[in-house]
Image (cartoon, rainbow, N blue to C red; front, side, top):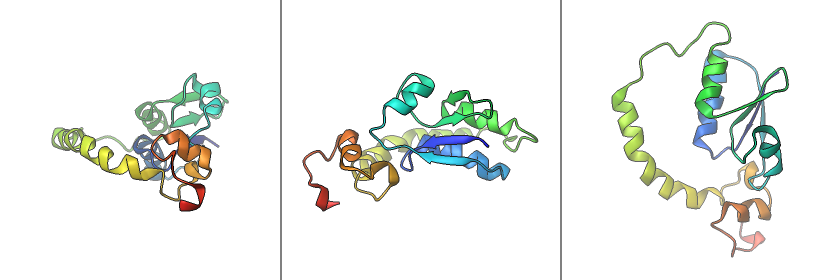
Length: 133
């Protein structure tokens, strides 16, 4: 079974997870702690997610590469044209969205922020005490 290493707060990970749902394919999601640098570096040479562990044990990074790889298994489901209007909207809205969301992400009860060090690694909440969360 394919394994997908992700963060719950990561929009690129959402893309990679969605293709499995669209195709009805099982996979094993693995949520990494936000401060786990060693795992992704050992897989793809840098700290990033999503990372797909293929059936042969090799690894693939980059969300859209993962989407294309999984979609090519069996009958593709992503067969329509790309909407330029939606792409433009996403491009224009992503900056404000991330400025609002990212400072709040480490406060959310997400598994990648399960430890104080994982939250601190995110960079926004180093001065808060553990009992605040």
